[in-house]
Length: 365
Image (cartoon, rainbow, N blue to C red; front, top):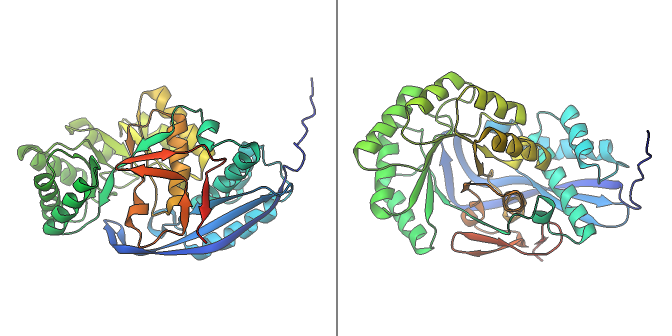
Protein backbone atom coordinates (compact mmCIF):
# COMPACT_ATOMS: atom_id res chain seq x y z
CA UNK A 1 0.00 0.00 0.00
CA UNK A 2 1.36 3.39 -0.98
CA UNK A 3 0.95 6.23 1.47
CA UNK A 4 1.62 9.76 0.27
CA UNK A 5 4.00 11.55 2.56
CA UNK A 6 3.32 15.23 2.98
CA UNK A 7 6.15 17.64 3.73
CA UNK A 8 5.30 19.79 6.78
CA UNK A 9 4.34 23.26 5.62
CA UNK A 10 7.32 25.60 5.27
CA UNK A 11 9.82 22.83 6.03
CA UNK A 12 11.62 22.69 2.72
CA UNK A 13 15.17 23.99 2.46
CA UNK A 14 15.17 27.50 1.03
CA UNK A 15 18.92 28.22 0.93
CA UNK A 16 22.30 27.13 2.26
CA UNK A 17 24.98 29.75 2.83
CA UNK A 18 28.59 29.70 3.98
CA UNK A 19 31.14 32.22 5.26
CA UNK A 20 34.78 31.98 6.41
CA UNK A 21 35.30 31.43 10.14
CA UNK A 22 38.86 32.42 11.12
CA UNK A 23 39.85 32.22 14.78
CA UNK A 24 43.37 32.51 16.30
CA UNK A 25 44.72 29.95 18.77
CA UNK A 26 46.29 30.84 22.10
CA UNK A 27 49.44 29.02 21.00
CA UNK A 28 50.43 26.69 18.14
CA UNK A 29 48.86 23.24 18.34
CA UNK A 30 51.21 20.50 17.15
CA UNK A 31 50.41 16.85 16.44
CA UNK A 32 52.26 14.20 14.44
CA UNK A 33 50.43 15.28 11.27
CA UNK A 34 51.40 18.96 11.49
CA UNK A 35 51.01 22.19 13.45
CA UNK A 36 48.01 24.53 13.41
CA UNK A 37 48.26 28.25 14.27
CA UNK A 38 44.65 29.31 13.72
CA UNK A 39 41.27 27.89 12.82
CA UNK A 40 40.29 28.34 9.19
CA UNK A 41 36.81 26.91 9.38
CA UNK A 42 33.48 27.69 7.73
CA UNK A 43 30.19 28.91 9.21
CA UNK A 44 27.18 27.29 7.53
CA UNK A 45 23.59 28.61 7.65
CA UNK A 46 20.51 26.71 6.48
CA UNK A 47 17.24 28.60 5.97
CA UNK A 48 13.86 26.88 5.81
CA UNK A 49 10.97 28.22 3.78
CA UNK A 50 9.04 29.19 6.93
CA UNK A 51 11.84 31.49 8.12
CA UNK A 52 13.47 29.20 10.67
CA UNK A 53 17.21 28.79 10.29
CA UNK A 54 20.09 26.87 11.80
CA UNK A 55 23.86 27.21 11.94
CA UNK A 56 26.68 24.67 11.82
CA UNK A 57 30.45 24.58 11.64
CA UNK A 58 32.62 22.88 9.04
CA UNK A 59 36.15 22.20 10.30
CA UNK A 60 38.43 21.16 7.42
CA UNK A 61 41.77 19.55 8.20
CA UNK A 62 43.77 19.12 4.97
CA UNK A 63 46.10 16.45 6.36
CA UNK A 64 43.14 14.24 7.26
CA UNK A 65 40.09 15.06 5.15
CA UNK A 66 41.88 16.69 2.22
CA UNK A 67 39.69 19.76 2.57
CA UNK A 68 40.59 23.42 2.95
CA UNK A 69 38.50 26.43 3.83
CA UNK A 70 38.34 27.33 0.13
CA UNK A 71 37.14 23.87 -0.97
CA UNK A 72 34.52 23.81 1.79
CA UNK A 73 33.16 27.23 0.80
CA UNK A 74 32.85 26.06 -2.81
CA UNK A 75 31.30 22.73 -1.84
CA UNK A 76 28.68 24.26 0.45
CA UNK A 77 27.59 26.62 -2.32
CA UNK A 78 27.01 23.62 -4.59
CA UNK A 79 25.27 21.73 -1.79
CA UNK A 80 22.82 24.59 -1.55
CA UNK A 81 21.91 24.14 -5.21
CA UNK A 82 21.43 20.40 -4.68
CA UNK A 83 19.27 20.75 -1.56
CA UNK A 84 17.05 23.67 -2.50
CA UNK A 85 13.42 22.58 -2.14
CA UNK A 86 14.24 19.30 -0.34
CA UNK A 87 12.15 18.33 2.70
CA UNK A 88 14.35 19.17 5.70
CA UNK A 89 12.68 16.53 7.88
CA UNK A 90 13.96 13.82 5.51
CA UNK A 91 17.44 14.26 6.96
CA UNK A 92 18.62 10.77 6.03
CA UNK A 93 17.74 11.50 2.41
CA UNK A 94 19.68 14.78 2.70
CA UNK A 95 22.66 12.85 4.09
CA UNK A 96 22.52 10.33 1.26
CA UNK A 97 22.28 13.02 -1.41
CA UNK A 98 25.30 14.83 0.01
CA UNK A 99 27.35 11.66 0.50
CA UNK A 100 26.68 10.53 -3.06
CA UNK A 101 27.90 13.76 -4.65
CA UNK A 102 30.36 15.16 -2.07
CA UNK A 103 31.87 12.00 -0.64
CA UNK A 104 35.32 13.55 -0.11
CA UNK A 105 33.96 16.70 1.57
CA UNK A 106 33.18 15.24 4.99
CA UNK A 107 33.52 18.38 7.11
CA UNK A 108 31.49 20.41 4.61
CA UNK A 109 28.72 17.82 4.79
CA UNK A 110 28.91 17.83 8.59
CA UNK A 111 28.49 21.60 8.71
CA UNK A 112 25.41 21.51 6.50
CA UNK A 113 23.82 18.61 8.39
CA UNK A 114 24.48 20.29 11.76
CA UNK A 115 22.88 23.50 10.52
CA UNK A 116 19.92 21.52 9.20
CA UNK A 117 19.38 19.76 12.54
CA UNK A 118 19.73 23.08 14.35
CA UNK A 119 17.00 24.55 12.14
CA UNK A 120 14.71 21.56 12.76
CA UNK A 121 15.35 21.74 16.51
CA UNK A 122 14.57 25.44 16.60
CA UNK A 123 11.42 24.86 14.56
CA UNK A 124 10.25 22.10 16.91
CA UNK A 125 11.29 23.95 20.07
CA UNK A 126 13.48 21.02 21.21
CA UNK A 127 17.18 20.81 22.11
CA UNK A 128 19.08 18.36 19.94
CA UNK A 129 20.11 16.11 22.84
CA UNK A 130 16.44 15.08 22.97
CA UNK A 131 16.44 14.33 19.23
CA UNK A 132 19.28 11.86 19.78
CA UNK A 133 17.52 9.95 22.54
CA UNK A 134 17.50 12.17 25.61
CA UNK A 135 19.87 9.91 27.58
CA UNK A 136 21.56 12.85 29.25
CA UNK A 137 22.36 16.56 29.20
CA UNK A 138 26.06 16.61 30.03
CA UNK A 139 29.44 15.25 29.05
CA UNK A 140 32.81 15.38 30.80
CA UNK A 141 35.72 16.41 28.60
CA UNK A 142 39.45 16.02 28.81
CA UNK A 143 41.92 18.76 27.85
CA UNK A 144 44.68 18.17 25.31
CA UNK A 145 48.37 18.94 25.60
CA UNK A 146 49.90 19.07 22.11
CA UNK A 147 53.44 18.14 21.10
CA UNK A 148 55.55 20.35 23.37
CA UNK A 149 58.69 19.76 25.42
CA UNK A 150 58.61 18.23 28.90
CA UNK A 151 58.76 21.46 30.94
CA UNK A 152 55.91 23.04 28.98
CA UNK A 153 53.88 19.84 29.27
CA UNK A 154 54.34 19.86 33.05
CA UNK A 155 53.31 23.52 33.19
CA UNK A 156 50.15 22.80 31.21
CA UNK A 157 49.34 19.78 33.41
CA UNK A 158 49.48 22.00 36.50
CA UNK A 159 47.17 24.52 34.83
CA UNK A 160 44.75 21.75 33.89
CA UNK A 161 44.78 20.46 37.46
CA UNK A 162 43.77 23.90 38.75
CA UNK A 163 40.88 23.91 36.28
CA UNK A 164 39.49 20.75 37.90
CA UNK A 165 39.76 18.72 34.71
CA UNK A 166 40.42 15.08 35.56
CA UNK A 167 41.64 13.64 32.26
CA UNK A 168 44.51 14.83 30.10
CA UNK A 169 44.96 13.83 26.49
CA UNK A 170 48.41 14.30 25.03
CA UNK A 171 49.71 13.98 21.52
CA UNK A 172 52.50 11.52 20.74
CA UNK A 173 53.88 9.83 17.63
CA UNK A 174 56.41 12.57 16.86
CA UNK A 175 59.61 11.06 18.25
CA UNK A 176 59.75 8.32 20.84
CA UNK A 177 62.18 9.97 23.24
CA UNK A 178 60.31 13.28 23.22
CA UNK A 179 56.96 11.52 23.53
CA UNK A 180 58.07 9.62 26.62
CA UNK A 181 59.55 12.77 28.20
CA UNK A 182 56.24 14.58 27.65
CA UNK A 183 54.13 11.81 29.20
CA UNK A 184 56.45 11.41 32.19
CA UNK A 185 56.42 15.17 32.79
CA UNK A 186 52.60 15.22 32.72
CA UNK A 187 52.35 12.25 35.05
CA UNK A 188 54.81 13.74 37.54
CA UNK A 189 53.00 17.09 37.56
CA UNK A 190 49.49 15.59 37.84
CA UNK A 191 49.81 11.90 38.80
CA UNK A 192 46.13 11.36 39.63
CA UNK A 193 44.92 12.50 36.21
CA UNK A 194 43.59 9.96 33.75
CA UNK A 195 45.78 9.94 30.67
CA UNK A 196 44.83 9.40 27.01
CA UNK A 197 47.70 9.18 24.50
CA UNK A 198 46.98 9.90 20.84
CA UNK A 199 49.58 9.05 18.19
CA UNK A 200 47.59 10.34 15.18
CA UNK A 201 49.09 7.49 13.08
CA UNK A 202 52.64 8.51 14.04
CA UNK A 203 54.03 5.17 15.27
CA UNK A 204 55.03 1.95 13.62
CA UNK A 205 53.58 -1.09 15.40
CA UNK A 206 56.97 -1.78 17.01
CA UNK A 207 57.32 1.84 18.19
CA UNK A 208 53.84 1.78 19.68
CA UNK A 209 54.57 -1.35 21.70
CA UNK A 210 57.96 -0.01 22.80
CA UNK A 211 56.27 3.22 23.91
CA UNK A 212 53.69 1.34 26.00
CA UNK A 213 56.35 -0.92 27.50
CA UNK A 214 58.46 2.08 28.56
CA UNK A 215 55.42 3.66 30.17
CA UNK A 216 54.56 0.47 32.06
CA UNK A 217 58.11 0.03 33.31
CA UNK A 218 57.94 3.54 34.71
CA UNK A 219 54.59 3.09 36.42
CA UNK A 220 52.42 4.93 33.88
CA UNK A 221 49.35 3.23 32.42
CA UNK A 222 47.20 5.31 30.05
CA UNK A 223 43.45 4.91 29.86
CA UNK A 224 43.84 4.20 26.14
CA UNK A 225 46.11 4.52 23.12
CA UNK A 226 44.46 6.23 20.16
CA UNK A 227 45.28 5.52 16.50
CA UNK A 228 48.84 4.23 17.03
CA UNK A 229 49.65 3.45 13.38
CA UNK A 230 48.73 4.51 9.85
CA UNK A 231 45.00 4.38 9.23
CA UNK A 232 45.28 1.73 6.52
CA UNK A 233 47.53 -0.58 8.54
CA UNK A 234 44.80 -2.61 10.21
CA UNK A 235 47.04 -5.64 10.55
CA UNK A 236 49.62 -3.52 12.39
CA UNK A 237 46.97 -1.97 14.60
CA UNK A 238 45.54 -5.41 15.40
CA UNK A 239 49.02 -6.55 16.40
CA UNK A 240 49.39 -3.56 18.73
CA UNK A 241 45.96 -4.19 20.22
CA UNK A 242 46.72 -7.88 20.77
CA UNK A 243 49.91 -7.11 22.70
CA UNK A 244 49.01 -3.81 24.37
CA UNK A 245 48.25 -3.50 28.07
CA UNK A 246 45.67 -0.76 27.42
CA UNK A 247 42.66 -0.41 25.10
CA UNK A 248 43.36 0.74 21.53
CA UNK A 249 40.91 3.12 19.86
CA UNK A 250 40.65 3.95 16.16
CA UNK A 251 40.30 7.51 14.91
CA UNK A 252 41.68 8.27 11.46
CA UNK A 253 40.92 4.69 10.34
CA UNK A 254 37.18 5.36 10.62
CA UNK A 255 35.36 7.85 8.39
CA UNK A 256 32.17 5.82 8.00
CA UNK A 257 30.15 2.95 9.42
CA UNK A 258 31.70 0.74 6.73
CA UNK A 259 35.16 1.69 7.98
CA UNK A 260 34.11 0.96 11.56
CA UNK A 261 32.87 -2.49 10.56
CA UNK A 262 36.16 -3.20 8.77
CA UNK A 263 38.23 -2.10 11.78
CA UNK A 264 36.21 -4.14 14.27
CA UNK A 265 36.16 -7.21 12.01
CA UNK A 266 39.96 -7.02 11.79
CA UNK A 267 40.24 -6.95 15.58
CA UNK A 268 42.16 -3.69 15.20
CA UNK A 269 40.45 -1.62 17.92
CA UNK A 270 38.57 -1.82 21.20
CA UNK A 271 36.59 1.31 20.38
CA UNK A 272 36.02 4.13 17.90
CA UNK A 273 36.52 7.89 18.17
CA UNK A 274 33.55 9.45 16.33
CA UNK A 275 34.05 12.96 14.94
CA UNK A 276 31.25 14.70 13.09
CA UNK A 277 33.61 16.57 10.77
CA UNK A 278 35.35 13.33 9.86
CA UNK A 279 32.28 11.16 9.20
CA UNK A 280 30.09 13.76 7.49
CA UNK A 281 27.72 14.62 10.32
CA UNK A 282 25.02 13.30 12.61
CA UNK A 283 23.50 10.62 10.39
CA UNK A 284 26.71 8.67 9.76
CA UNK A 285 27.66 9.20 13.40
CA UNK A 286 24.39 7.54 14.45
CA UNK A 287 25.21 4.52 12.29
CA UNK A 288 28.75 4.21 13.65
CA UNK A 289 27.52 4.46 17.24
CA UNK A 290 24.84 1.81 16.65
CA UNK A 291 27.41 -0.52 15.10
CA UNK A 292 29.79 -0.06 18.04
CA UNK A 293 27.05 -0.79 20.58
CA UNK A 294 26.02 -3.92 18.69
CA UNK A 295 29.65 -5.11 18.56
CA UNK A 296 30.35 -4.27 22.20
CA UNK A 297 33.00 -1.72 21.18
CA UNK A 298 33.75 1.43 23.15
CA UNK A 299 32.60 4.88 22.12
CA UNK A 300 34.56 8.12 22.20
CA UNK A 301 33.41 11.52 20.96
CA UNK A 302 36.02 13.86 19.53
CA UNK A 303 36.33 16.89 17.30
CA UNK A 304 38.61 18.68 14.91
CA UNK A 305 39.86 22.14 15.88
CA UNK A 306 36.44 23.74 16.36
CA UNK A 307 34.73 26.62 18.11
CA UNK A 308 31.97 26.31 20.67
CA UNK A 309 29.50 25.89 17.77
CA UNK A 310 31.01 22.67 16.46
CA UNK A 311 31.72 21.29 19.93
CA UNK A 312 28.14 21.89 21.06
CA UNK A 313 26.88 19.78 18.15
CA UNK A 314 29.11 16.90 19.23
CA UNK A 315 28.12 17.32 22.89
CA UNK A 316 24.40 17.12 22.02
CA UNK A 317 25.02 13.95 20.04
CA UNK A 318 27.09 12.23 22.74
CA UNK A 319 24.88 13.27 25.66
CA UNK A 320 21.61 12.44 23.93
CA UNK A 321 22.83 9.11 22.56
CA UNK A 322 24.60 8.03 25.75
CA UNK A 323 27.23 5.35 26.23
CA UNK A 324 30.29 7.45 25.40
CA UNK A 325 33.12 6.44 27.74
CA UNK A 326 35.56 9.11 26.58
CA UNK A 327 34.94 12.72 25.57
CA UNK A 328 37.46 15.01 23.87
CA UNK A 329 35.60 18.29 23.28
CA UNK A 330 38.13 20.82 24.48
CA UNK A 331 39.25 23.02 21.60
CA UNK A 332 37.17 26.03 22.70
CA UNK A 333 39.67 26.24 25.59
CA UNK A 334 42.55 26.53 23.11
CA UNK A 335 41.20 29.59 21.26
CA UNK A 336 42.35 33.19 21.73
CA UNK A 337 38.71 34.16 21.20
CA UNK A 338 35.43 32.41 20.46
CA UNK A 339 32.88 34.10 18.19
CA UNK A 340 29.98 32.09 19.66
CA UNK A 341 28.15 32.04 22.96
CA UNK A 342 25.86 29.72 24.93
CA UNK A 343 25.45 26.10 23.79
CA UNK A 344 26.69 24.74 27.10
CA UNK A 345 27.74 25.87 30.55
CA UNK A 346 31.11 24.60 31.73
CA UNK A 347 32.02 23.64 35.27
CA UNK A 348 35.54 22.20 35.33
CA UNK A 349 35.40 19.24 32.96
CA UNK A 350 31.60 19.16 32.70
CA UNK A 351 29.79 20.63 29.72
CA UNK A 352 26.12 21.04 30.66
CA UNK A 353 23.66 21.44 27.80
CA UNK A 354 20.56 23.52 28.28
CA UNK A 355 17.02 23.25 26.98
CA UNK A 356 17.30 25.94 24.29
CA UNK A 357 15.94 24.74 20.94
CA UNK A 358 18.37 23.22 18.47
CA UNK A 359 22.01 23.69 19.36
CA UNK A 360 21.29 26.72 21.52
CA UNK A 361 24.29 28.58 20.09
CA UNK A 362 24.34 32.16 18.82
CA UNK A 363 26.99 34.40 17.30
CA UNK A 364 28.44 37.09 19.55
CA UNK A 365 27.47 40.62 18.69
